[in-house]
Length: 365
Ligand SMILES: Cc1ncc(COP(=O)(O)O)c(C=O)c1O
Image (tube, rainbow, N blue to C red; front, top):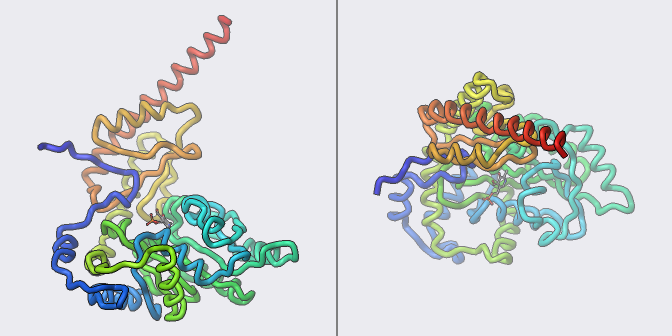
């Protein structure tokens, strides 16, 4: 069957495993991870911990599971956690902090996904009042997804972590896309881990694995997370099939993220040059936002794009997030930008016509 080529800009999670990964998965030496007998898992966890400069690491199924088991390990029920108001944990993880971990969120609005030092101090002071749930955890996110893949530099992360630690609060870094941050700043990933108690990163996003994420921290923290992983049904057996692809990802998929970043910037620049509202300077990694006007005909926009094989998510809060990844090439970007520009124009003109119709209707009736 001659399948039409699809250019999928919804997320970097759509990336499929590479031929090398599938080969590694099929050849992986396996054992039962419950007994810590799977050599591929053991090797992968050691390599991941080394790369992050952490004492220990553990494979989990997803980023959400990683964040959850870290929070369960660091924070007692009935306490509160401080989190950027639009962080993934706060808005996109189906409410596990309340539903499972017994935590109350103290959301703090950041700028470009970054919590300010004074805002953090104030949030801590507010949660330390007698009628509040006492703060036990600060959750940071890098890159920040809802802010459009924005990067927080290691020194700001370390400063926030210092403020938290000085007040007896632990720090978890949701680093689902931490390798994008590291590549964007040209810094080793371990630089982002200074002062962090636990972290999670994802294998299944820009790194192209089919599934998997990693939790890392001190040996004690990872041991506690391992117990919580078992509690929530996340224990695995021959998990080397996942870890084998993870090993390939850590060796060969990190540096190439720079191409995704260049492509996101190219797409943003071309759309801006075509007259669309895009903040090119805000594109730091593999995501960009396209602003849409009120009443914009998004159904027409999406169906026009789909007819050319381009898939996007619908607008949220007046903007559409477009994400680049390994399965979108630079020539795809050049092709896409022309189509997106024309479809946007059409969807906008449709709105103008609809507005004109409404005005007439109001005059008549
Ligand atoms: C910043 C961030 N953290 C965590 C996650 C959760 O990862 P998963 O989908 O593997 O549960 C995502 C997923 O998009 C994310 O963007």
